[in-house]
Amino acid sequence: MKNIISVLSAISIASACHVPALAQKFTPADWAQSSFDKMISMKALPDDILSQDYTTSISRRDFAELIHYSYNAFTGENFVTESSHKFDDMPMEDKSVSAMYAMGIMQGDENNEFHPNDNITRQETAIVISNFYKVLNDSPLSIDTSILDNFLDCNQIAHWARDYVASVVKAEYMGDYDDGEFHPMDNVTIEQAVAMISRMDNLHDKKQAVSDSQPDNTVSKPNNSSSSSGSSGSSASKPSGGGSSSSSSGGSASKPSGGGSSSGSSGGSASKPSETIPPATPTPEHTPPPPNDNISKPTDSNENANYTLAAKCFAKDKLLSITWNKITNAGEYTITVTESRNHKRSGDIEPYTKKYTTSNTFIDIPSAPGRTYKITIASGNISDSIEFVTPKISNDKTYFTLPNTMEEAELLMKEIEVNVWKINSRGEKYASTTSFTVHKDIADIVYDVFQEIFEGDEKFPILWVGGYAWRGGKSEHNWGMALDINPDQNYCIYTSGAVVGDFWLPYENPYSITPYGDVINAFENHGFTWGGDAWSGNVDYMHFSYFGT
Picture: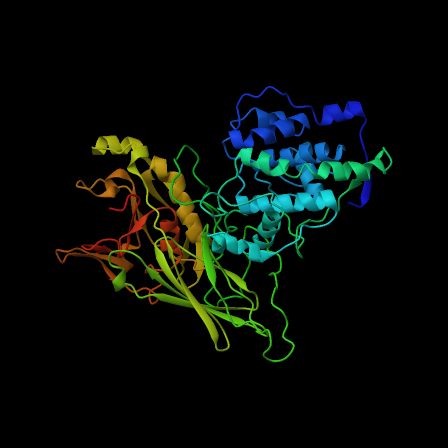
């Protein structure tokens, strides 16, 4: 911490960082009680923390305040910054978030948003703790990634978090659960966060000894650049949201207002590879540190060379994160991914293969629910293969009011307008909109689905969409829970032999839905079922249903 800023007087300290009330509304678990007692005695817990149920997940805003209070308690200082944070979704006067930003402990996303109410996962927490340690000590934690092999789920730790997790585990600020796993994607609870930070209080005596030798009216201010453990300067960043809207002339549809209930998968939209596959790009959640190179350089052409890729894979949001060992003297790796669908008639759908190249030892690729991914990483004559299955997403009828008559249905429907691509007489795609009617409780979800399609690289053109239609029987169109897209180019074949529509020619006709394209991915990411391979009977390539019928 190099730059110098002034410390407030005792009076201003009390006003800027008030002393928390000692009366607790909730009682921590037995294993966390001593941590709470310690932190309360040090005045390291803000009122916002003490007034909540400690078993609930801690928000990013509350975690920032916890770190801010802990810094002040551990060092005997009161850190303030003359500049505010940059986040559009936070009040500029928020001192704790401004302090975390100035110290380089926590950052936001590329849209200048902090996402204060979002939870924080264990692997994200490892980054924050590692950065906090570096600010307190002016030096990073040591890293030994081999320690991660002790966790049964080590392959689920993201490549951008591995150095940080390894460093905080080695320092014993975090550890495994009783099942021997780290659980990197679990949210951190309030009492877990307090216990982790309390383990760092041994720094208090060390920092106090240092501060005793410094002038009473100064405090070292950390560098405003991002701090971290290891070789990177990465800070704990917040994942960005979906892809940016495609720019085009003409009108665009806005998301419908009103209370649609949400379900299906969540998370930011994944970047999809174009037809010419680009180089590997880092996960949108974090800019990862450079891969940790633990491979000893050979003293001759053979000695100490590493020839084991040991590929690993885990799923996050709409991505598969794949990592492997560095091969000595390897300049580039080729990653071949064969994707197949896991549904009743998936044998009728040909697998889809993509190839990527990268010089890194990690890559993130788009993924979708209900698929099997066969992945091969190769460099020269060395290769390794793994298989990963993504689970299906399904929606529950329990939370919806479903009509029994056409009269009831009419009262539950809502017309929405969505952005779509169309093709003009010159064969050029242009942005437009289309409208249709769905159940009001899924209006927002359906809008999001079509926005994902609109923002996709495919720019899939849509001629027509059919939603609510009272047909009687068991059709989800009765409920406004099913949609048909481009029916003439995506026909339905009934078991009786009856056919609705003209053909289905994916990869040939631009209006035919491709089984691994943006349309199906967007719907299945939100729990819809595609009729093209879902059932052993009818084959309905145009059809997407919310409950799978």
